[in-house]
Image 1 (cartoon, helix red, strand yellow):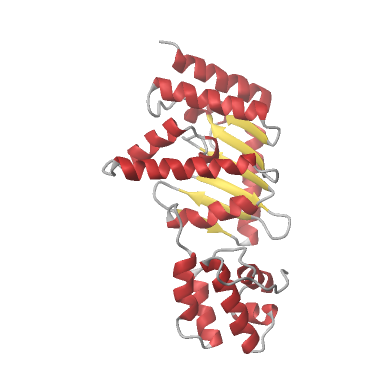
Image 2 (image 1 turned 45 degrees about the vertical axis):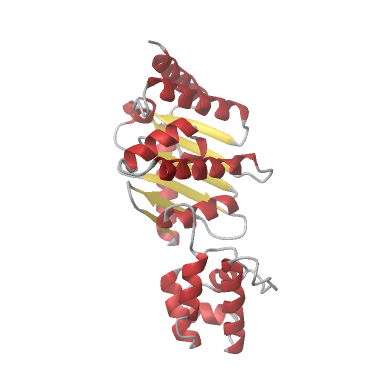
Length: 277
């Protein structure tokens, strides 16, 4: 598990939370493992919060306050540490993506966020938030483009993208926007060796992810995590048996998808169709 380390508690709210959790735990004479067992989680999990490597959870913070006799101290710090530029339900997944060694992604009707163009992201945001101001919409688009910088990092995760063929046909933003988006998807796949893209064709029929999008994130130093998402909500799945079930289902769906080479041909073909008047 992560060893206790000295944090500068004033660098950001998450570091302050981690430093305070460690201070309270040590004052109670508990190891990370002992506190974890009383909070019904692992000592490794406690260590990740103390090291500032995971965003704190409100429900767990409430439990820890009760165990450590700290009133609502950790809960208040948790609220500060959880502030994010993205939707609250997605914020944990965004930070985990940055730490992951590999990401397996499935989307049914959309190009994944990390591979979206600004025009495509703008059209999606306007559709999801029809009454938002232009300033709010552009804020969402800017945040999404900033997230894509993860792929430029020397430590970028291996990104395995599986996208349903339907996503290649829905004219998000119109024909010009879709042609640009699909060409961008093809270019990113072709030029970045750490990105693999597969198209799951209509001919594959029913599969486990018909009703949801999914991210399976794996790490070098902690267990894998799954993030599932619907229109206005998302959920992290950390239960090992459930994560394994998602992983197996993803492998089965991947086996039914087109090969990476055939997938690239299909993406380019769809881009040409949108580009043709």
